[in-house]
Image 1 (tube, helix red, strand yellow):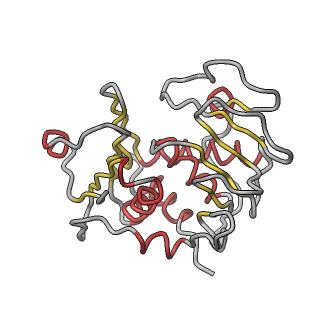
Image 2: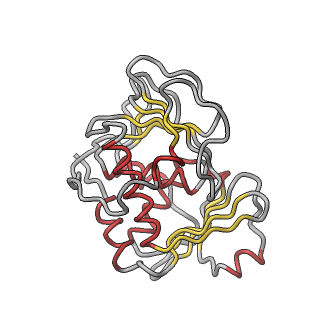
Length: 239
């Protein structure tokens, strides 16, 4: 069984990186958001508490993420892994929780649907929700910004579920995606959306495990020389 690295990563974020940037997001319309290690950990803790207390997630739960490459997708992945759940990046049978940023379809039997508005300042879902759907933006801020639950260092055994396929363990996820130009010391890694969510997740885990910073570009955002110089980028995740 491969060890879940997320508890150790989150500990590093809230202690050694508490006030330094851990995640910098460039989104459409010139949106730039910088999250320190402490702020990122707070978002993950709130979402973890929401998962456990509101959605009844537990080790063995699969959380299906119908989300684009986005900083909130990283929050959801870390939260699922912190609570011992697996994630799925495409539709899988048997997912107990489905998180979507699209117009949420009615839920299937045994499934909880979570509507996640992506704008940073969104306080609620912008529209009507089907019966039984949960509004992430409206609910998550009410939860504690520290997570006091059990540390699941030995689960999930499958980090990313893949339907009928065996799925991907943490060891394989990390080994599959190596950024160009990675080196020792503090790393500022540029991750474009074109690298894909699986690659971005693996790169994020690697850079945060070593106390580095992830610069995440949303769909359509170009990695200009000016941007790379401003953020002091030291490595880039290949598309």
